[in-house]
Image 1 (cartoon, rainbow, N blue to C red):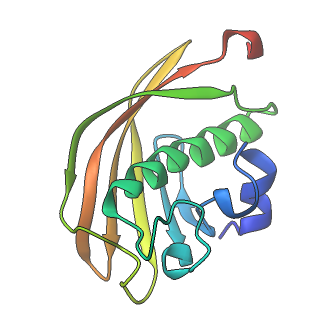
Image 2 (tube, rainbow, N blue to C red):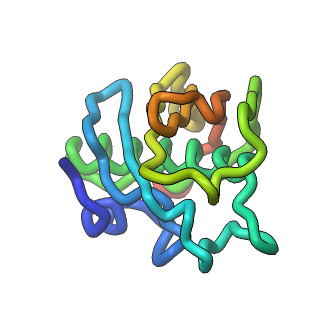
Length: 145
């Protein structure tokens, strides 16, 4: 298992904006992560008294970043920086997530990748119930090649 300190070392998201607490498992094509921060009153994406399900898209995008960082580290380098450019097929199955006890879990997998872009599919669960799913695309920084 890979903990938060290792995650912080390989992603640009720092402090509370790093949403994942641990990597449960991963390989070259996919990753599974876990987080417990969705109930935190000081969550950086919280608005008013709620953390809405739409923010699960950021959890999905950060799963991509963690996976990219792990893949790059394994290859002896650093991940290219990326910019989220599209979300597709997103389905939210709840309205909010701050009231859910226990951990969130995400499964993300590479669907398409090229030198300058990647697309992943993601699914986020809580206690075996699907909360959100979709696809996210990033453009990778050409200056980091």
